[in-house]
Amino acid sequence: MDAEPLTGAVEPRPDGGGPGVRVDIALRWGDMDAYGHVNNVRIASILEEARIHAFGVPAGTGAAGIGAPVSLLDGVPDTVQALISEHRIRYRRPLEYRTVPARVWVWVAAAKGASIEVAYSIHDGVDGTECVTAGTTMVFVDSATGRPVRLTQEQREALTGLR
Image: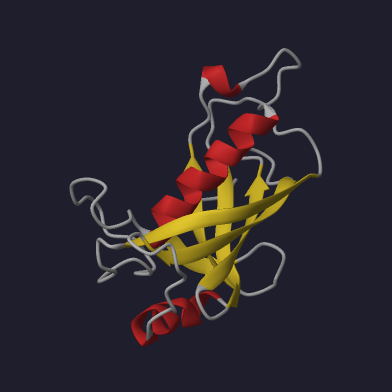
């Protein structure tokens, strides 16, 4: 592949559908199954890594690191959890194990009252072929009451560049 911007850059998606955060995820030897491709359970972990890299680490879960390209979780109180309520994964072709990172695009398909629909596209890091498309419903919940918490205006503004 040609020289590309650094991982974490907001850039046009390869499908021409608009902007996304591009995240390069290193594949590990242990991700591979007996068929020589990345196991379906490991694909869910790749989606998680890409989502955290794109939107940041939830409050109260660890020390600060590199800031996320999209500040979805900045300023969210420790009492609000970002929980996953659903995953949808479509395997279009096997993602072969390689020592070259997989290229993942992450974007927001929809922002609702207390949730967002995160969309993903995983591509082979060598030939660029799309291997997986996926979606995640992420809901913001008050940890004390278990009730949904509406997205703030700041969160909605942070997401405008990814829709």
